[in-house]
Image (tube, rainbow, N blue to C red; front, side, top):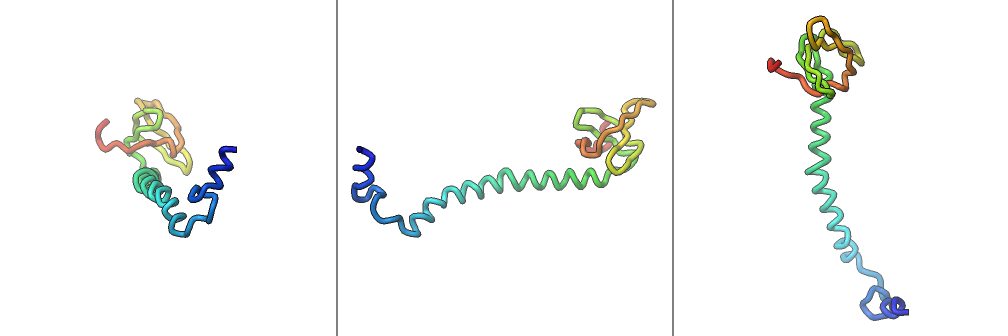
Length: 108
């Protein structure tokens, strides 16, 4: 009963519908939150993915790499989907291209 009384009270939202400007004001915080998430989270992540994809595409024989699992080694062979990495003398491991985390420039 109390809920019905509040709904019928003047100015409590039970009367005339809100105007167009009031509806826009209600959505403004949501739009601002999406914009903040886009510029702080989504856009940088997309840029990082683009750079990683470019790095994977430009791998060459002889590059020293680090895999996602933490293996360090030198690329000895490359195919479309796999890469053979030499992790020690005469010890070679095949890994998926997507599992290469980074290319190391002369630090090994």
